[in-house]
Image 1 (cartoon, rainbow, N blue to C red):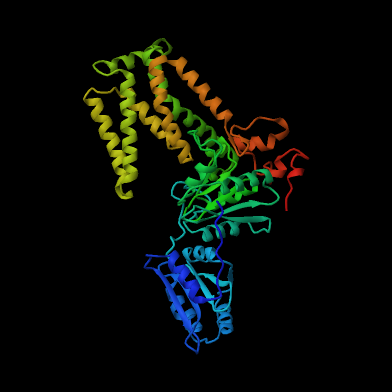
Image 2: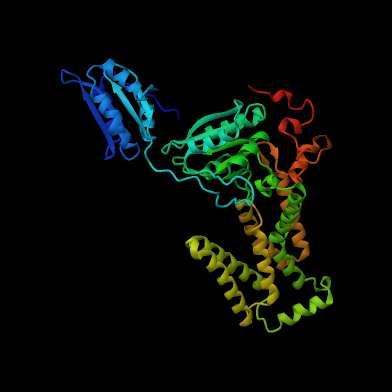
Amino acid sequence: MEQVKTRIAASVTRNVDALRREFADNDHICFHLFESGAGEAAAALAYVNVLVDQSRLQQHILPRLSAQAAAASFAEAARAQGIAGPVPDLNEAVRFIANAGIVLFIEGRTDALGMSLPGYGKRALEEPVLEVNVRGPRTGFIEDLDTNLGLIYRRLKTPKLKAKSFVVGEESKTDVAVLYLADQADPEVLREVERRLASIRQNVVVDSAQIEEWIQDNPYSPFSQILNTERPDRVATALNQGKVAILTDGSPNALLAPSVFTDFLHPSEDLYEKFYFANFLRGLRLLTLFISLFLPSIYVALTTFHMEMIPTPLMLTFLSTKAGIPLPTFLEALLMEIAFEVLREASLRLPRSIGQSVSIVGALIIGEAAVQSGIVSKPVVIVVAMTGIASFTIPSFSTAITLRLLRFPLIIIAAWTGVLGISLCMFAVVLHLSSLTSFGTPYLPTLEWKRWREWAGRYVMLPIKLRPLSRREAMPAGEGSDHEEG
């Protein structure tokens, strides 16, 4: 429901009383009254003291305003200090104050003047934590929206870069920016992004993950359909590919839409390496994706139902290590997978200085102790370890979590139906991925010869001279002509 706007009264006292009611029981809202020569209220400044820059306010703004005695002089002094932004109504004044701003009411005027004066601390620019590159830019986003926008504008110095502002969250009033290149983004995708952002109904939005869940096509799928990234260089590249970026105040992650499945498997570092080395790593990631998802279930199925498919020397080795183990292979694999996930979760919650040591030492000790005590066999420990290491090669954390989640039902199905069950599950996963879309874009790109430069770039890294310069160049001639905008 659209909020009814409250007009600003010509009386400073009435405006101050209205704001006192809005910020009732809030000890940090401050009002500074300025009196005229006759002792009447000529102006009032409203702000939240823990949000604004107190040093600049006390040393520069308040002394200049206090030296005035007439309403007209207050307006001139305010403009001289940069307080010139129009605030048309009280609702906007409340939002302005809550967003680290100061608002000046002047007697006789039915509008107010505002100025953003943030004084809270910001985290310094650092290297991204999850998307670490060997080669390439080392700067990552922080929790300040203006800083993040500046990082994008530094990389795309063109007037075609557009940014639209939104406010989401009934109570949090979180600022959100939608960025796109006017000559590259699909207008239909852009309109759909704006429509879904406007449809968000949530009281408090503190991170981009909440927005992602609201606006993605299928929120009940375990696979994320919107890519999130900490890297400004990746956002700049994605914008040139026709994607739309969504930046949220308070979040160090940007959302990129539309996104396809291959986007979650290719880090930005591929752009900074030779194409043959990047293609080798892409093939390796596809292999480790398969290992991470299916290796434990395949081992359980082969050793439980299909021993004849295993070479005889290897089968004899498995049987010799299995001797004396009281648990079936299914329970061995399940218990070791659970133990590995517990160690991984514990290492994330511990301080960084000891978290990595605990995960490595804990895995070694538990694995060795389980084998020595005869609870699990050595091949199971090797399979689980290889699976865990393979999952670390997936660049997208959300995709890696999805694979870890699907691994457990696959193990159970493999212990029940063998290779046939794994094959049916693999078919179901591919079928589900084929049914997904991201803002109307198929999640699994189709192979069309006329769009070879577009889909080839999704699967393999072309030599730099053969790569399309932009989304328009990758599309067949005439196909994008009806999408031109601005």
